[in-house]
Length: 209
Image (cartoon, rainbow, N blue to C red):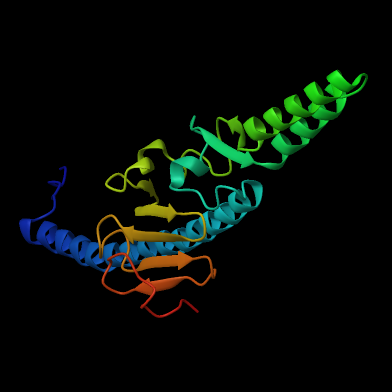
């Protein structure tokens, strides 16, 4: 005679399900904490990258200073105008000298032309490029031209605001407590500061060690 096969009882199934729930309750928070730590480490690295990009930009375009936003540092098509006022004076003087060779009448005419060219060209001579191309299209996103639409990377928002003489960079988690717990701040000093409430940090917050 064949023995009757016996399946799992309801109690056994409930015990197995309870064990799975307990394991999930232990594992999921650890996974979330690991993800938060990874996001925060990535955010600090991104702030360092933005600081370096601002330094490169200011060195490359001294008449502009620091980039106004992340879009200016990125690969998207933006217009950057740098100025140089020395070329105008050189052109004016050369034209005057060249036109002034020959007779007395020509000399007077050359001086007049030289003075006129000097006045017209002594202003700003501009050269325009279409992109800085220092950051990639993730940190240097086009949306960052508006403060309300910062760039997004690894669970964090990023914003930089620059002027001729200074800049600030800020980062905060998209969902505080879930994608990160710290906000960050940096400026031309290169010191990164952090907040513990998930908001954008400020210069008043403690430095990150």
